[in-house]
Image 1: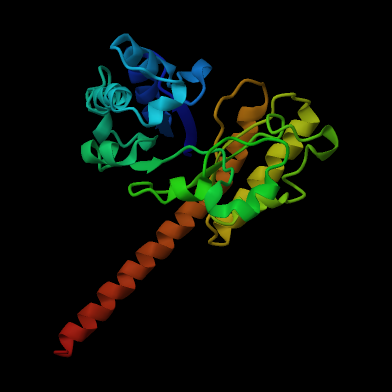
Image 2 (image 1 turned 90 degrees about the horizontal axis):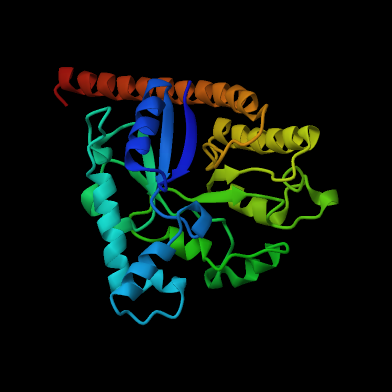
Length: 281
């Protein structure tokens, strides 16, 4: 049974070696985020501060995305992580199949590691490329462009997040996922749900929300839709792991089904080629 979790690389390297090796032991696939927009999750501020210490005149932490010196520091970080040899597993991170995907800086990362998938780790809010859809943003918006960022060369799959509390959805609408709010529904037709969760947790509300999300994921995956899976950013409450395990088992059955179908298709192609060879065509 495979689980899928996302981590931001703010922990020590030897600690991360242990996390990756344990994930392999328990059949867990990882998506490792190389930097986070928010400082309390290993944010971009450190790279900006380093550049300022070298005399760079930077207006804000947003210069992380444009300043060449800042990006140079970040590239060094990426290269260090990707080429690090795990002290426990004995394999470089860029070659470790336990890692399913990375987040961010597409082309540079791909120049070092072509083995793994890459995604942008976006909340899912629309930008100028889909201004007509900004009406779906509820009461909360992060300044990113979902469509433009996922069209960057090197991005392999798109993701959205689902945090009704953070998005300031009122308590009476806390189950907006079940009601197919336009923002959530429009994204779910085209992407995979990466992070989701609830902050103000009442067990009954949490279970309804999570079951709603996972049911939608399962419906999409079993019907050949674009949403192929979901995962949690962090597990901070009791009882959540068992729900994830149940849903993971259902998705595992779908994966096995598609593997069988793919094998049947490969067998049919081989049979047809063999027939053509025997008839001299």
